Length: 166
Image (tube, rainbow, N blue to C red):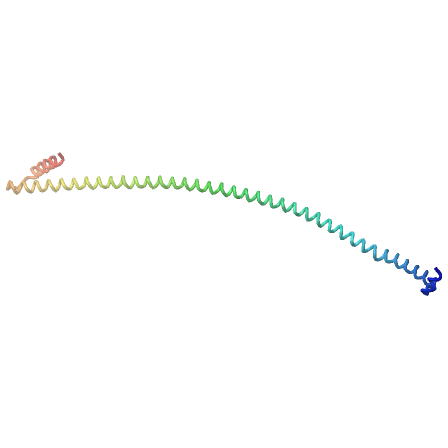
């Protein structure tokens, strides 16, 4: 071994000092560089694990929120359908009431028109009787050739009216 060391020009003192320095540097690197790097890596692993756990929790909460939102939408749809049906029923009721009012108003108008027509007919008949009576009195006075007294005129008018009524 000495021969090999001489062949490579190795000096034992220098080799031992380099080995001691290497051990010191290795210990220092382990303590001040490698340990903090491992610590940082472990912290990152923990944060990643927490992030994944939080992501799962958030996914579950999101699914719950979506289910609740869907339930609220279903309830809102049911309420809106109920309100629409109530509005339709109310509209049908109002339509029926208004139709009944319109029918009653139309019947009232027809009744009033009949009454007015009957009143007009009665007035026209009365006017016709007077005119016929006047014509009978006038014709009788011309045919008879004399002036009729008011009693005669009244009697002739009444007789003409009786014959027209029959």
